[in-house]
Structures are given as structure tokens and as C-alpha cells.
Image 1: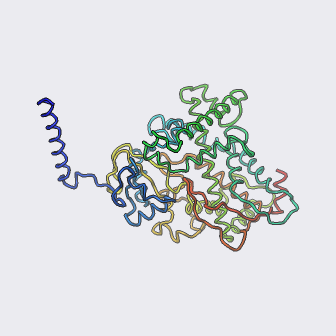
Image 2: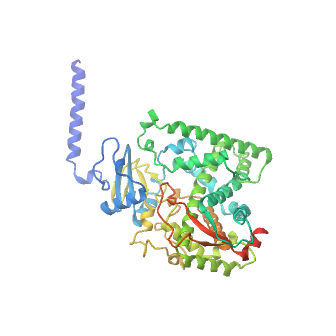
Image 3: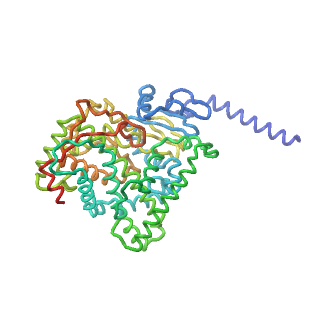
Length: 495
């Protein structure tokens, strides 16, 4: 090493030491004040070893020890979790723009067209264009109204499958989850493509189920990217192959619609493509198909399963809902979507279900695009911010008797504060499909109550333990006894 190189190296090292010393002795006001953390992170994995399923319960325990905001180091990612209405409001009002990015996840890369769908696109002009497209052309009130008959028809078709013999008044055993999945999935597919994709072994249903499996898993590769280099589980290969199969299927749907000019959501988007090929590209349309199927199906299915479980454990509420439907609709026709605003107690049941068992117990994560502050703490750029909605929904400081099922708590309340009840998220990136979700859940739940009598299998209450997944399914699928209500059978069969 020559003298010049030696002097340069020594100078750089000296500057580093001086800077390090200055940082250590800097006044507290100049240092970052990060949220408290559950102990020092381990090398490489950080706090990953502390996480136990279900995560929302683990985070609730951390909040009890460290307060309503705390930080974690998960592999290479910094994460902040908040669990109080005041902090949530601060996140999605003053900091909403800064917290409007999505973190990088494997599913969005391979299933979400490399983070270019409305749910995965980084915040910016392109995302705002996608959001407007979704709000105005796909999920607007006018567009939803145009497809209301499809949802009514699919509901009747699905419920008819439960009536094998109209004269049979015996109780029958039913596992609800497959029925609910069939109903909601086919509602969405008929709106999108004009036809259903049902039946054992159907390849598209199998692909969608595989997407749910990957989307509901906390993949280590999302926090330890170096694992992708070895792909020890073959996950990258599997998801890449799945993404290609889905894309091929979507391409077939688009080609079919171009030939037959179908009156569906896909058909409408393709008609818009003729006037603006830059915005309404095939990939953008396929991204909307993916978002509607993935975001719309499972959230509605788990909400309906939880609602029926709660009603079976609280037969007085089930009876009250049945009386309301009989009073408002009578015995001469089936419930329709336009009846839902009149059915206030049914609406309260749905809100109370959202409160106790939100379809997203941890609101879909955000990522800070710049340094900001939450609760007086410094949140560095690139931090993942999670909201523990499940914990807030059960906070005794926010809700009276928080663990009890009391739909009456919502009666007479015109609005519910969004920072206290957030089944569809908050701020700019709140779920744009909330209107469709309310319609599908309200119509399906109201129809199940109107058309059938329901009982538990025995005197034991339904187990309300939570399973693992982003949408918090029941640990044990709901099984119940049902029989058609004779006053409704003929109406159902003749429609």
C-alpha cells in the first residue's frame, strides 16, 4: 500500500470514528426515538422467533407489555404495530399520504403482476388512476346496481340446492363453509365473466384455492429475501407457475369476451379499452379480476361463517333478526338488496360480527415512504406499519363489554367512528369493495335467516376459536342443523 492510499484510508477511518462518537454523545432530541420493542433482536431473524399464531393475539400481548405502539425487527424489515383509535387516526389522517405505500411481498410479485394491481401498486399517479378506475367503472353504486339481479339469482340457485325434498321437515346436517364459498365465488365470477366455475376438480377453483393458501401464509421469504436465492421450499417456482396459469386463464376470458361482447365487468372494461388502450391494458384488467376474486371471496365467506356461528350461540338474536325480516318483507317474496337499509337489526348483526371477528384482524399493511412520527415516536422511511384492528375492536376502553355479542350496541347509531371499527381499513388505501361486501354479506345472511330454521348440533355452544390466515377463518368449520321454512319453500322454488 502506498503512502497516499494509507493516508486516505486512515482519514476515512478517523472520520467514521468521530461520527460514531458524535452520534453516541448527541443530545437526545437529535436521536431517533423509536417505539418500544420486546427485547433486543437476534442477528438475522430479529424478533421473528417471538411471533406465534394467531399474530393479532400475540401483538395484543406485546401491546399490554409495551404500550399501544411498539416496534419489531422481522428479518431485514422494520415493523411498527399500533393498537389504539387515537394512533390509528394519526396514521390515516396526518400521515395518510406517507403511509400509503404497500410493502413488497412475494404474492404481489407473482400473482399481482409484479405489484401493478390496485392493491399492490405503490402510491403515486398510476395508483390514483387505478383507484379512480375501480371506483368509477368497477365498484361504483351504479355498476353494483346493474349487477344486483345476478347476485339475487345466484343466491336463489345456491339456496335451492339445500331443498332436496320440499315435504321433508326433518333437520339436515350442513357444513356451511363450502356452501358459502360456492355462493360468494359464483356471485363474483358471474359479475366478472358472466358464468360460474363450479364442480369437483374444476381447475380454476383449484388455482384460486392455491392463491388463498399462499396469500394467507406469512412467508419467511418476505422478511428474509436471501432465502429466495436458494428457494429451499420451492415457493418461488410454485408461485411463478401459478401466476402463469392464472394469467393464461384470464387471457382466455378476455379473448372470449372480445368475440362475444358480453355484458359483464370484463366486457365493460374491454369496451373502455377501445378509447384508452394505455390505461385499460389487458394486464390492468387481469389485475382487477385478481383483486376482486382474492379480496372479495374469502373476506365475505369468513364473515358469513362467523355471523352464523354467533347467531347459533345467541338464538334470541337469530329470532329477532327473523322477526324483523318477517315484519319488513312478509311471506310473499324473498329478500332483495334494496331491502337491506330497512333491516337495521340485520345490519347491526353484521357490524357486530365485523367488530368481534374482522375479516382482516391486522389491517392490510402500509409502508412509510418518508420519515414521519406516530404517537411522538420516529418512524423511519421504509417501515411497515400494521394496525391491530382485532385488538382495538375488543378494547374495554373503546367498547362496553367488548367480548360479548351485542348487536344492539349499534342500533340507533347513524355512523360508527372509523378509527374504532375498521373492517375495510382506513384512509386512501381502504378497501374500495366495501359497498359490494356489505351487499353480498347482507343478502346472503338475510336469505339464510329468511329461508331456513337453524339449530346447533347439540347443547354445546359453537367453538369460536380462530384459525390461521389473513382473513381469520374459524379454526373448526361450522356445522349446523337446518330445515327449510315451509312458508318460504314455494317462493324459493318458484323463483
